[in-house]
Length: 119
Image (cartoon, rainbow, N blue to C red; front, side, top):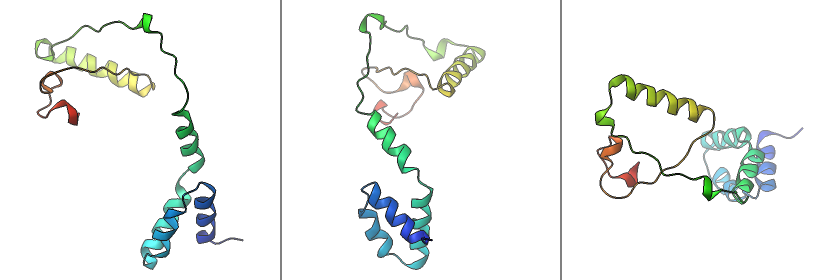
């Protein structure tokens, strides 16, 4: 039966992550054991599948894309804001969402005190 170190090395080699072996081998005993445990907990197969999906072509029907109507949150009641938040939370939990890019200015429309590039 293989020990944890050998299992970790086998996994790292299988998924072409041999560079991590240097960190394991050059660490003190405590850090070495922590790294080995982390490697054993990672689902490398799932990570590889997710990575491969990034190369899949996605079909987007541009005819079905519509401009969105803007909403100024300052003109909404607390209840309306909460309703929007609840709808958004439900959509995200259902793994469905859309992305919107806005041009210009600060992120004030998003109630952010920093520029949009940090949002």
